[in-house]
Every structure is written in structure tokens, then in C-alpha cells.
Image (cartoon, rainbow, N blue to C red; front, side, top):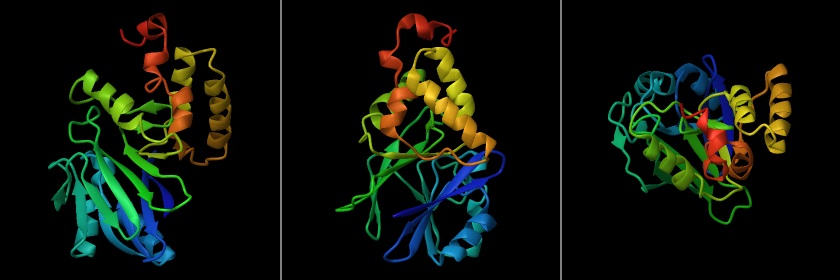
Length: 240
């Protein structure tokens, strides 16, 4: 399984996931169809499906154009509001693309129909991958826009936070620097936050993506996954 990280728009990421034996590919969060097809052509792969994490335009606006250009393309997600949707997915549903397995994980909070995708290959030494959209980002999470805070906590701490620590996290936006600046205010003495912040500043200066992280790393510096470990006094200013 090969993952191409494709920066688009102001700070979005879309992804091209390549099954290296069949040379078929699946895209995640198609914001710019032309750019995606350019990368797919360069890689010499056939695009067969789109996985949309949620319905917001900056994650789906390329779906309709892509579906028009590729008749029969499957556009999948959990929310009927997703543009050009052909198949609605359910929590816990399994998909397979060649040797790549996909587990669909409903992660409401940012939107009520937000779906994250956990991918792995059997008998493969490579780490599994999580495409978390705007549910979980590097050192942060998406804005809580729909559903309850309790549902968002469940999505982050229970649904995603319990995945294998070696899982690579591919999120929907490049917000790492600002997320870590916030994390530093929450835990000013956290050495993992300080180290990651210095690293992210270097990446930002060189205009290099900070994705992927790993879930194990997130548990060391992401305040929204570490919330149960933090003292109430440290959280109080962020809950007002």
C-alpha cells in the first residue's frame, strides 16, 4: 500500500492510496479532481473509488467532476450530503480493494456523518493507516460543529484512540503548527509537545507536510487524546 499525500487549496490534504500489485487506487477527500487525476496518471494507476470523510465542500467539491470523467466510479461515505455519493457506508462496515482492507469508523463531532477509514494489509510489515479527515489531526482535532461534545470525545478517545499505536495518521488539513501552539498552552511542561513544535516549525519553514504522524505519537502530545490524563485546572481555561 502506497499513499500519495496531495496538498490542495489553502491547507487541505487529499490522498491517493495505491494497491501496488493490481495498480488500482482509491482516493480520499477529493477537493481538486484535475490534480488527483494528474497524480494518478503519473503513477500509472486506475482510480476505482473515492472515500469521503464528510460532506464539507473542501473535502468533496471534486467528486462530481471526477464521477463525470470516470463513469462507474464509486463515491462512498456516511453522509447523504456528500456530493455525487453512490454508496452510503455504515459504522464498522468492511471494504476491500485488492489486498487493502478498510474498516469504516463513524466519528461524529465535526459533522454528524463524519467517517474515518482504517486501512491495513494482511501479512504486511507496514503499519496500518488511518484517514481521519477533520475528526483527528496532528496534535489536534476539527471544530466541533454538529452532535454533542460527548460524541466527539467518544470518537476521539474511544473509536480512534484505541487503534494500534503504530497506526499512521493522515488527516485532512495542515494545522499542525497552530495545534501544537495550543497544546503547549495546555501542557507547557510536556517535552513531547515542545519537541514536536520545534520539528513542525522547521517543516513549516521548508513548506513540507507534517503528515503522517502516528497514533502513538498523538497520545503523547495531542491534548484531545490526552484529555483524561490532564489535570482539571489545566483544562478549565479551554472549556470556557
